[in-house]
Image (cartoon, rainbow, N blue to C red; front, top):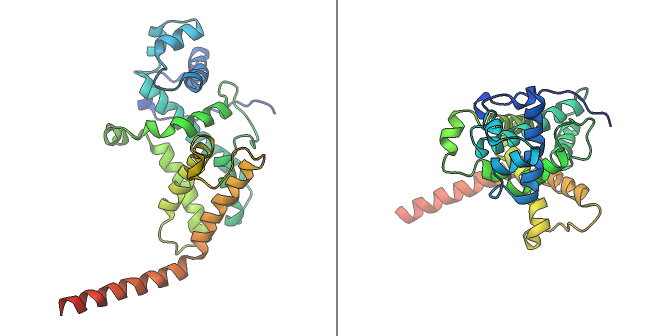
Length: 251
C-alpha cells in the first residue's frame, strides 16, 4: 500500500504552527503517537518527547502550547481521517444502506484502508482513541474548548453518519444521538473486550472480533432504523396511558 500526501484540515486554535507543514512537525506528531501509546497520556511530557526525537522542549512548544492541545490535535486528526476514508470509500455509491455499512466498517477497522499517511501510524492512533480518546473532551474545560471549535471534526464525523441514517429513514427522530452512539460504542466495545470483558458480549480473543463488532453495530443501527415506526407507535401509546393515569389520579 503506497503512502499518500494528504493535508487534513485541523482547527488552527489547536496549534501554534501547523505540524503537517514541516518535517519536524511531522516527527512531533509521529513520535507523540508512539509515546502516548507506550506510556499513556498522563506520563507523556514534552520533555520526554523532545528527548525521544533528539530535539528540545522549546522546539515542541513552537508547535503546541501544551500536551492537552497536542492530544486534542491527534483526536481531530483521527476524526478527519475517518471522514476522509468514509468519503473515499463511498465516493461512487448511492445506496445509503451500503454507505452506512461502509462507514461502520471504517470506524471499527483501521486495517481496511485504501491509503496510509507516512508520518502517522493509524493503527497505533486508533489504539489511543480506544483507550484514552474520551480524555480529550471529558474535561472541566470542555465548554470553553467547544466554543473554540476543538470538537468540530468530531461533530462533522457524527453529522456525516447522521445524514446517512436519515437517507435510510428520513423519519428517524434521533439521527445525531444514534450516530454518536455508534462511534462511541465502536471504541467502547473494543476497550471493554480487552480490559473489562464482562461489560460486553464480544470476545476479543476470537479472530473475527473486528467483523463481529461491525455486525453488532449494524444490528444496533438497522434495528433502530427499522423499528422506528413500531417504536413510535408504542411510545405514543405509553404517553397516552401515562396521561390517562395522571388524570385518574388527579380526579
